[in-house]
Length: 273
Image (cartoon, rainbow, N blue to C red; front, side, top):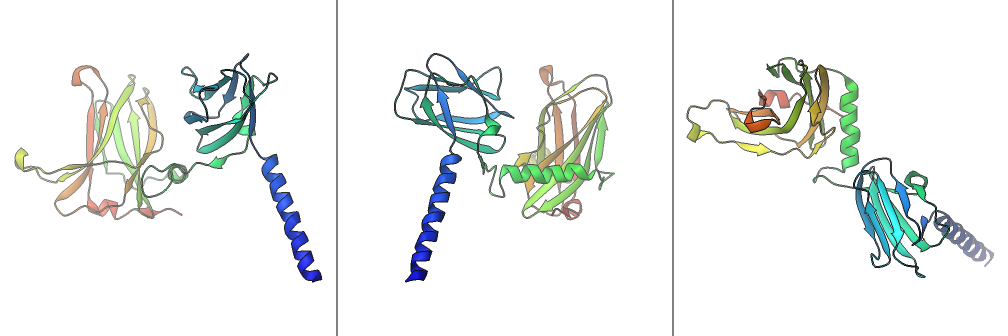
């Protein structure tokens, strides 16, 4: 009987501590209809959703993508909710009305959960990001002959890595000119090695699941590195993987560079831990 009582008391204590911890970690924001409050985020805001837009206004500031302005439309009694996703974290708030609402809230001072944002079926974006950073931290060139150069722009495959069902292609692009190279697109195509007749060419585009740095511009005299994640594959005989970079310019006058990989190159992918 004593043992049973002790177990019940321990369970009640544990429940009380857990409830207290939940209450202490609850994110509460006070807002007012007489002044505007702002949530300051460490990165671009990906998602904002308020519980009841009839009583509150919540939106990303167009000029500053890491800033959210929140204001009450009118005084309200019942609390409502606000959900924000930024920097791969989800922040959930309870909004309460109060004239003493602060003007600025640093969002990193609140509790959050890891955002399981999926680009595809392989793994969450935050894992893609961490693995791409591992690739970029290695600074090792695995392939020296898989490259091309044209009009002062050079693109080269540095390495291929593998994690589960994901292939990580690390590209290095160097601008040897003084004029910036504005990237229109990176493209990956599986196509025939030989093109005897245009009508006989069969090719299809491979779309990356993730791109680490989303490179859009390569300034003059600068080298950048980028990592693309593609679902694992092998290339049939007599076919190649063509990698292409296109420049954004007036009237289709941009510089276009392509080079190709063989199946044996992909089979040399190194494992990521």
